Length: 200
Image (cartoon, rainbow, N blue to C red; front, side, top):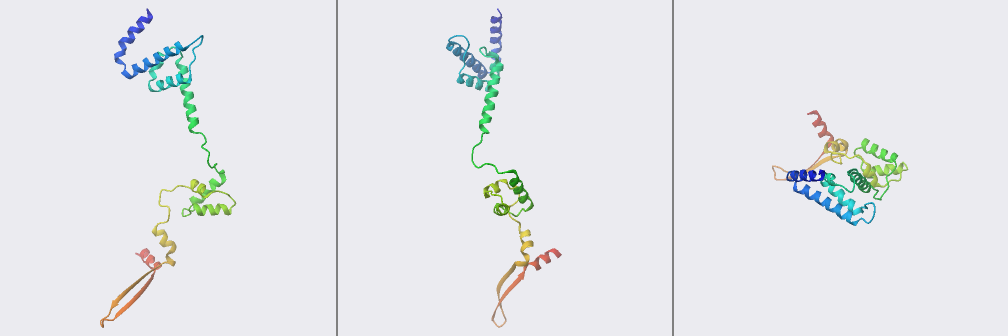
């Protein structure tokens, strides 16, 4: 009588369920019948394919827990968690390649790149070799502090750093009243221009 009542309630509630959910529940019921027919004696034995099938359906339709009869819902949830842990353990496995360098050189690389923003990987690599650290230049580039700005110095910094050694030159021709040509060669030192910019 209780089974008949459950059946009637399921028939009444079935139009309210989505079609895909009903198909998933039917697939689970059919699969349980297949497993029960496969049983020879005693306990039901599930293969890895059976577990995978039930776990995938559980991931897409958690409502299938209501129609499971040959295993407990807690068992299916435990399988799902175990598979999830195994998957992420596989994803985070070591891929091989070059091992990580020690903590001291990493800290030193970050400190050098922070305190000397104009130094690139080759310069820091050379300084580390002088200090006795055997590190590849690609490892130095990997552990350097990443900056958002341009990698080199700007024009203003360049001019301030090299102004005493930089000069602007120009060559031009000046015609005179007597139709002679005078050639003028002008050299202007950049420090004077920068001083004039500062004064203005």
